[in-house]
Image (cartoon, rainbow, N blue to C red; front, top):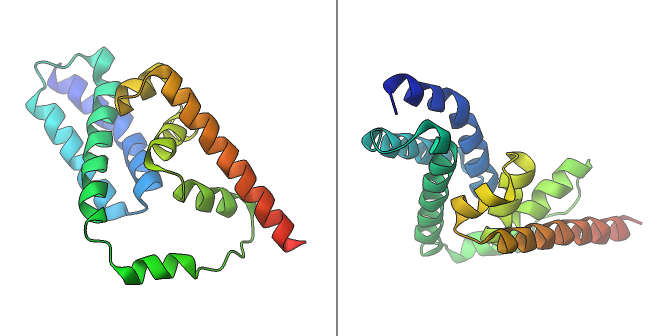
Length: 161
């Protein structure tokens, strides 16, 4: 990969990687750090990465970095934040807020697969490469995530009646 191709990758993929990480972590500061680390790792391996595989490579690095940060943060979860989640109010003004709330509650694999597919437009094969799942596992996780979101919204609609 040339320097020009590297710069093109930054222009093409940095926003998508950022959105993917923010959607999964809900922390813009961590997302910025992960995006920066991702492109730093690409720069270090610039001679060994081809332009045609750069997108999947970048998302794979970002995904792995995100998982590492999530695991590190889970070790430091305090009881106050756990209690705060349970006491939140579920009154929302529109459907997008319902969907975002449901997505935030998905297991990590389902959330990652769903956001890569529905928010970033990746195909099943590239999602598998990024997340380390098989294509079948990707499809199952996306199906389960969508099913959970549908049930979540249905429950909220029943509560509002």
